[in-house]
Image (cartoon, rainbow, N blue to C red; front, side, top):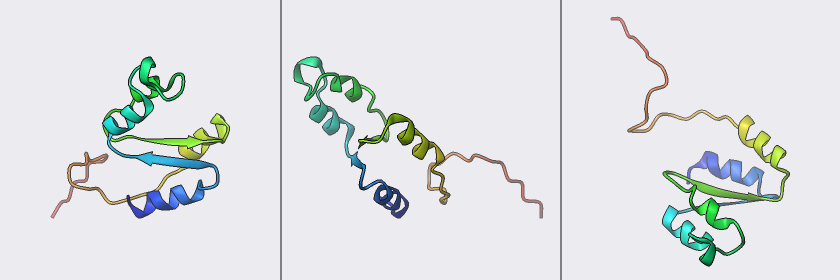
Length: 92
């Protein structure tokens, strides 16, 4: 987990919990079908876990949580395998 995510998580510590892990483990925990889900409807969340994902559980109103995530912006250096968002031409 990188420093920027730790700082973001710390800001929401009083209202939210983040769960990161292997999708299959989270799917088993939530339940993959109605018959094995922990609470009604959680198997639907389980089906959405694809690629790099995690869960944020919060007691904030939906609008406030969406606003916080939409407003959050931070810059970082690209890592190997990232797709460039801009083209830069260097003329020597």
